[in-house]
Length: 304
Image (tube, rainbow, N blue to C red):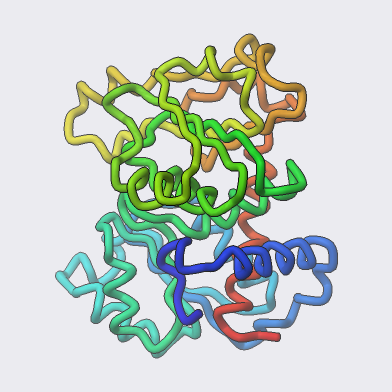
């Protein structure tokens, strides 16, 4: 494994190795404090981010390494017209590994063709977000004690939500997975996700516009925000943005051990009154992202 662009580049066994390593880091952090001493991570974020960028930086720092990079395309030479290929070729001579986020689908793939150091896709447009999916898989594993035999509800923006696309693809390889796709008709899961991953693996799935009707069946509810930045039309965004709001009242119909997840940031799709519910795992999920990224950095750098 030289780069990580798509979660499906990892086998189920490789994912399990990363999860096991992340859990070991969580339990024995002192073992890993100097594993990346003198190593440098470059964070090339051509699109705004808080959790993903900071968790990558925290991950490298906790491994004893250093971080350089930018968090705004306008502060980089791309604002002068420099290509992704040239940026990566130059930065690769300064750093040992690169985490890259870009608004255009496929940009991280282009980067791998011009880089001598590992590239991690930290999100490309509405396409892929593999480290968020690794975070999600670690969280589900920790919260439910397994990754197979689960009924998972994906709710909200399933059309543009790259986290949902990657998670649906990843979960399609686990036996007994059942997906419930909850969205407005305009924001349904794209056909390519169903035809490439869900249907070939004979994963049972249902589509609905009604969250309340399926709430009581779910083991995991994965909420997403309707993403303003993906819409071409402000009117459509305003019409759809409040399609699903999870409240304490709605949670009364859920299983006592259902897990609520969200890749964050949330806007108003989960009421803050749910934050104290033991089933609310989204802040634990954000914390888990640091540990799984530490594990991934170690693997890509070949650090024993």
